[in-house]
Length: 482
Image (cartoon, rainbow, N blue to C red; front, side, top):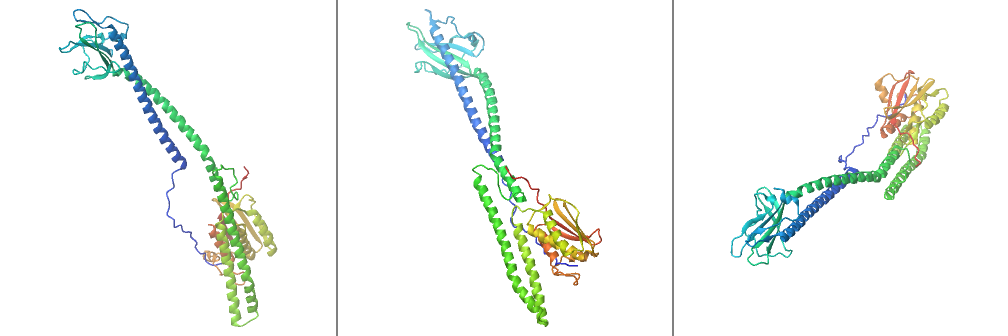
């Protein structure tokens, strides 16, 4: 039975060290946007809260000034020097004990010590305002009052104070002070802060949702580009043909240019291989014919060496052709047309053999070059036709994600597993009486290994030899019209 040489191991080595994948572009954009949005909202929230707190403090100060002006218009000193404050229309909190709003009047006669709290609001009850004792009684601020912040053990007060001197002789200098507890500002500030947090939170959620939608719409062409690249790599379409944004068009055009250049390189490699085969075939044929006419040992030696050279040329040309094909992108070859064409050929070469295709699988395709599939299946079918008594069966199916082609014959077969592994040895033949060069099955094995597949021999149910060829399966073709 024809054989070919032991398979040469072609383990592809990847010297590049594994690189950690970069972070997702979508994730990086989302994180950057989230960071800036949150930072901007925090700064805006802090600024708005500060402005509101400043506004409410100023508003409270303005109210205290109004109360101070009313108190200034109502205060009087009687003939005995007693300070009198008749009732006036004002805030009712001034009559509520410890309500947080207070007024107090201090007096000082020229040359005498200051008298504290000669009059005060009912809201102070039995307390006095913690005014500084060394305050200047003669200072006249430009706005007509002084703003103070008073502090005791438990409270902080905002106060406005004014000094007045009634026009009558002998009246003391009066210091009028109206104060309010800062705690009065806490409640509106808390309400504003709660509303601000809700508003900014809603705004942040809306902004992030808008950013997520925008990123989805923006990155959708990249996702489509990735899918189209996968279909090109799988051989479902020859080039990128989708509609892409203007920003991606240069990339798509460059990639299509690379695909075209790659296809041209493969075609040039095949053409050069064919030219080399044609250039060597003529001198080898001349040497063969010349040596055939010489029965001397030299003539026999020349014949043997020429035959060996021819086998080496065929072997290396087939290997180079397959290697160039594997480096190409977007390869896809339907199996059924190739098988039908080969069956018509081998049926004429081996007319006494019944070649039967057991399954009809038009959807299955080989992920590789059509010429290489012809080479592998042609050698397998020719081998089966040489050894079969009268019947050869071919089965094509998908097995574990690969293309599985099984060829059974009813010939003598090979019972010894060790001999079955030797049939793929290059240049070796188990039966020298049968025609052949002992190279065909080795070429099949080398081509299969180049594509990442395999070929093995086993016992066929028909009693002869079973050859099982495993090859990469091309995905189903799809309609690329958009």
